[in-house]
Amino acid sequence: MSRSPHSSAPFAPLPASTWILSDGTMGMMSQSFALAQSLGLDATDMRAVPTPWLRLFPSHAAIPGWQLTFGRKPDWLKAGIFPELLITCGTRMAGLSVGIRRLTSKRTKTIHIQDPRISPHHFDMLIVAAHDKMAALAGSVGYEHVLVSTGSLNRLTHDAIAEQASSLSKPFLRLHAPVYAVMIGGHNKRYKAGAEAFAALGRQLAALANKTGASLALIPSRRTPARHLKNLTIALTGLSYTLWDGQDPNPYPGILGQADAVIVTSDSVNMTSEVALTGKPLMVATLREEKGRIAEFHTRMRANHHTVLLEEVLENPDLLTTPFAVLDEMPALSAQVRQHFGWQDRA
Image (tube, rainbow, N blue to C red):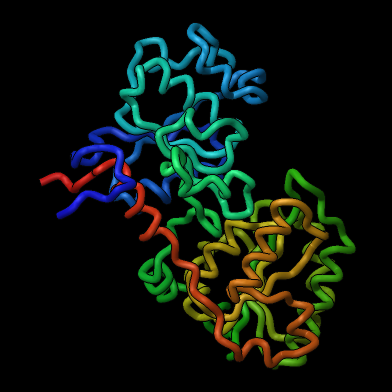
């Protein structure tokens, strides 16, 4: 078997120890564990909080003696215990990755997910989104260790969807076809979606159901304000729908196996990326206008035929009959990571 020109290491076994280091933010942890799972690695969930200064200036962690963590120093850091592979995600965790790489004299290999806002050369591998400016560096000389994804990294698989679809609760199984799953987000660091935003979404969903004859499976998230769901469901009076109450087992992702089409609110890049795995008609509903990198992500998803705007479907329901492209990036990404490090499965 010949070596890839982009490989940087001789063939080696997979790391014996892998850490996912985070401050507990679910979206960041999810992407890190998704990569570990795709690589076939058993990763340990480790927590640490970088200092406020390090969050602002992560490259300072490369300076000998620089303080890495805020508050009580973790026991593993005191003892100088480090893994063979460290996976981090998000700008605020970039400094800890840089610091651990320095403390181990680069013996710990580091993979960072998302744009760290510092030079890629602080990491052994960097995985950034296509809508990040740093994505332009990927593949150029000296930046072979920069990989690019269209969506966010995720653990969703067709097998997981099929397995959980078989155990959906009765209210969702009673919905008549066609079934449209509605994944609802809400408040985030960019904005708060108020009562009118949810009322408007309810009116759009009602119009869609009336035009298509679909029943609706409504799945709110932890970020969805319960008081605003009332504004949404008022518009659905008399229509066929079921709202997950947060008490029964979460119907996601099993609902994707039952759904004929899916609506996702635009605030969630992670959810949009996951649902695109199915290749089913995927409509994006806007709670509030997205700007910057998130807007660029949705523009790219539409251009690549992964999604369509809900408002466009309301004008032309036939858009749901056109083919939607599957977004399944994890196999190719994990293969590139393995190739770069020269990793082979253990015998």
